[in-house]
Length: 168
Image (cartoon, rainbow, N blue to C red):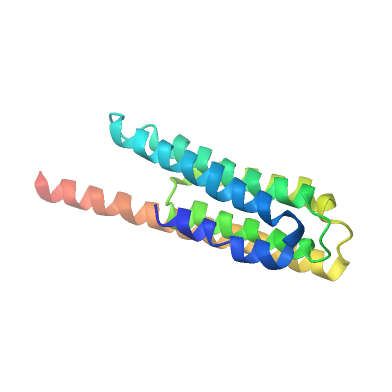
């Protein structure tokens, strides 16, 4: 629930980087992604057990990533190339804030990086230096947050096993 308002705050980046599609960005973020995400989260509250949690959160991430890709495809703004870094924000949300389990986080990270690769041509010509910087940011965000995710899961498993041993 914390990640959703942070994603919505990316509208500030849209205002500066893609003002030509700002109305579309507002509609997609506040009229599609946020309401659908809230519906999914409310449905999760009604479903028994946690087995639907990670797939549902991956669906929300797919919506967020898809929104950014659509905006990159539709814009003709000269600064749109800098909006690729917003995908790094979604990647950090997937692996750190939302706390997906490792295999789901890895799958979501690969999907986000693949979306990034497919969207590179959408924002017009990107200077090679800017492209290299954008690649590095996304890959470092992905690798760093996946390592943190793995360490967190490992710690949780150890804590569970220690508690179980104490209980027995």
